Length: 322
Image 1 (cartoon, rainbow, N blue to C red):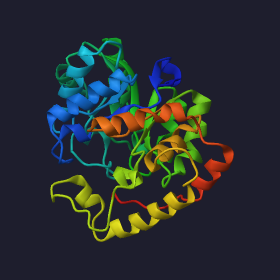
Image 2: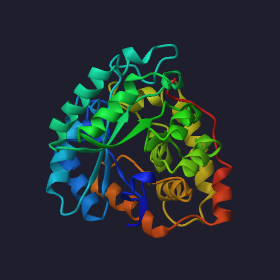
Image 3: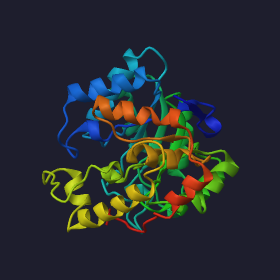
Image 4: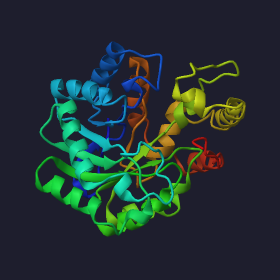
């Protein structure tokens, strides 16, 4: 496993981190706590040292599992979590004031709940789970960051950017108030490269690349007859026949990149890690086989310029979160 600096935090994080939404259950069906704990432990054994969870992932259940494994680990595991919007609306709705989403007292209270769930005295990286640029000049969120850091409850602070809105955090990145951004970045969604990534490099802000495998499509595992339980998030994400479009796009990508080292999922992760702005990619992993395959990506190294160019041609302007 190779490691990178997480922006100005100075933290050395594994290139492959652990996205812990799926292990919370509820919106990602087909797993169980025992398998999740086993996968988490295996990832840590392989050198992974960064886990991203959230209070909203099954009302703290993901945080509880993550905290349990991290406390038992043989080396330091950096823990990131998120304050959910008080109005429980993802992404942040246009025109809604921050007082309805992240009021000061609520931000403090949510952080204290996460501390209890994780079983730690300090959160390494706390994040706002949604963001709206109209909030930038408001005072409450700034005071929350300052006071949570001053109290020692939070070491570093970041923003999880709304789906497919990378430019919405540019003011926050330039302000020096945040240490990291979390953003959708994958072979299909390359828009952060235009403005956000250069700004993060300039201001030394760490980048967490989320949805690196497009909610599973870039593993190549989806088939025409793939179905999900109605309660599963993926049933909504791939709804209305979208899965057919996805399969065609993925098949084209697979054929074009057949000579690039690694499985399709590994190639997709290599694409992300080839960008110098990225600190860590955080795929979801619930099985040992997935953990081992994803963690091996670090040893494969970055793509060559020629390979990168091939993969760039498969950018796809879509937003399945609408």
